[in-house]
Length: 407
Image 1 (cartoon, helix red, strand yellow):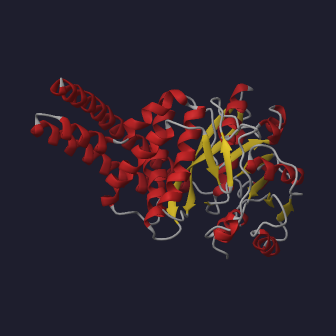
Image 2 (cartoon, rainbow, N blue to C red; image 1 turned 180 degrees about the horizontal axis):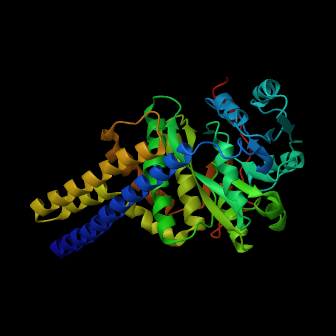
Image 3 (cartoon, one colour; image 1 turned 30 degrees about the horizontal axis):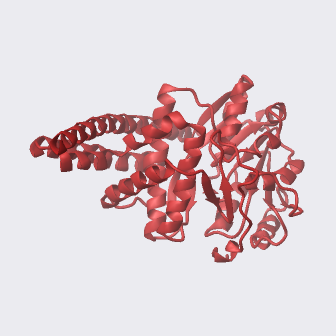
């Protein structure tokens, strides 16, 4: 009986590893093609600075909560845009936020295009980010509204890339891939950045090959103001954990398309330690499970080397098992190189971390199979099976902002 179970386990591991190798090889192809497309866009130069009379006006929203490493440079990058007509709204939920003095300094550096909004600290919806954004929306002047998370950093041609697809009136929203850039040289931040660049981004590009884009990412949620009004405004997103996913869903449900930009945003990853990294990634895992349950099991197939290693441990024919493992490791390292090159990573991590990163990814995936609660900054939130935030599941605010580095 034990031999039969081992044989069945080996066969299952072989099938999973073979499918994962095929997936990873296809991901390499998709990543290389996207990198070529992004390079072609850059080679064509700016679109709107040469024709400012045709450019839509843009308002960029940057909701902020607490100080975090490199926050100042992240925010300034959105203020330094080679774009003719835009403004930036920086916002915090209440005046006790430790980031508020920094936001006011940045507004003083860019007084002609930057506004700071402070919420009253009382009005809340279930999603903390949307709570911060609601009073900021009153200061919008642009035809295109862009929401980007506080840990994102962009180059001066960012808004030019964002605005371009809106020349097509069928486009209701646009979003962008992002790569991980560790804020420091610590292991936790490096592993967090690797997951974004080597797992998340390639999986998006593979999914785009088989299905239309019906969601956005927190790196860039760009939407026509008229379309946002049609779908019910920001309030329509406030009850959902994955507000970016819900925005894309509502836009496509109203007959407009969501475009993936040929541009890559840098996500500055600053994890306090490995435990913090795991908590962060478990939140992502449970969010994905809530909004795309049918796809969640397939995430396991994005880890070829650990699956092939499991087959090697169970298989009787070690020679063939070692060959399968060598193939898995080869395609995994090819993805490591291709993803960082195509997405423009500034500091490429050593390839030896790939197996550790994938093993951690499988552990997070397994944890994400169970439970509904997630930690978001200083809040403990509970997610319902349909991706909504449970009104009774939110935990109290803690004083965790003091743990972030001050600028």
